[in-house]
Image 1 (cartoon, rainbow, N blue to C red):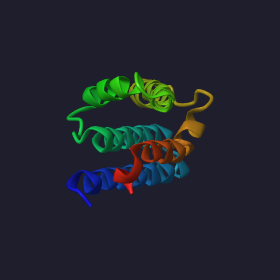
Image 2 (cartoon, one colour; image 1 turned 90 degrees about the vertical axis):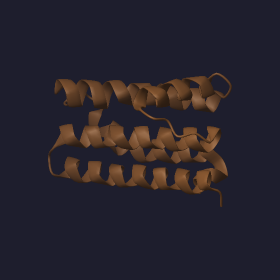
Image 3 (tube, rainbow, N blue to C red; image 1 turned 120 degrees about the vertical axis):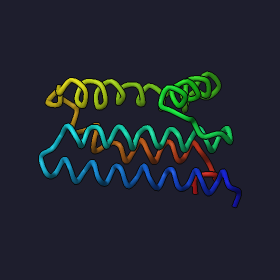
Length: 130
């Protein structure tokens, strides 16, 4: 296993841990913290995907966003994932965490569905994410 494969797998493991923490916060009634943890899990999954596909881990979230956009130009499946990423960035990170607009319809679903996002990003990363 190469360093990239090991590192990508570790990033995906971190994404899953952040999602578990998000679910715990949601169960405790702290939807704002749950949303931010779900956003963090989403971002980590994208960082794992970018590392697996390019061999370079993004430095910050804008770098991850740019690299995801670039990869989506050549891959329709990544393009679909990017739309989901942008939706989560807006809903979970922007509206809920920063603006406390957490009771919009769909916020709880997006937190729960973070597991699907991570699984899809991992699948798109291929063998490097195992």
